[in-house]
Length: 183
Image 1 (cartoon, rainbow, N blue to C red):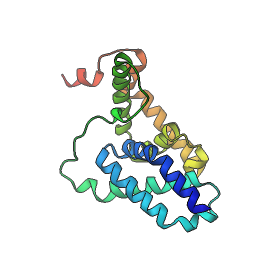
Image 2 (cartoon, rainbow, N blue to C red):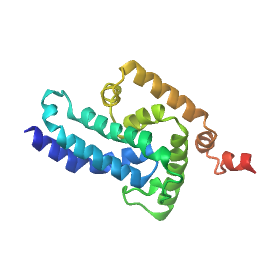
Image 3 (cartoon, rainbow, N blue to C red):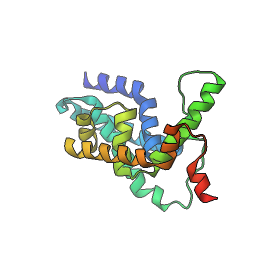
Image 4 (tube, rainbow, N blue to C red):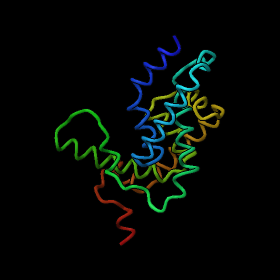
């Protein structure tokens, strides 16, 4: 029964796990490797699922741990990470060209602001607002207390609200204040 649940989850959740890893790691190739490693770990330790109250936080914990592992070991030792197309172009619902262009611009702005957050704040934000986990489930997924998750989400929201590119986006200003400050 547990194996069937896990197999079904793995089939259904590859794309969301991959996008979650992309948002945490900021790179498609790294995300793909992390998710593959996470799914292998999940399958290897599937017997421990019998004692887990909820499968989703447990599996996201495996994905997050694989991302942390990648951030800790491989990424810092590279001179340059592979430059790939923007993460905003990950598969989503079909739409018209104007809406797609606007959505891509907004997504790039949000992704850039998200990348500027420290990993300790970025992970809870991704799990809350992308993976749609509750604060309690995030706490299980990252191995922290719910109060810690709540404070990290609060701090991340505060920093994002103060980010100049996010402020410009919220104000509807098409110019990038980061570009103006570099000029």
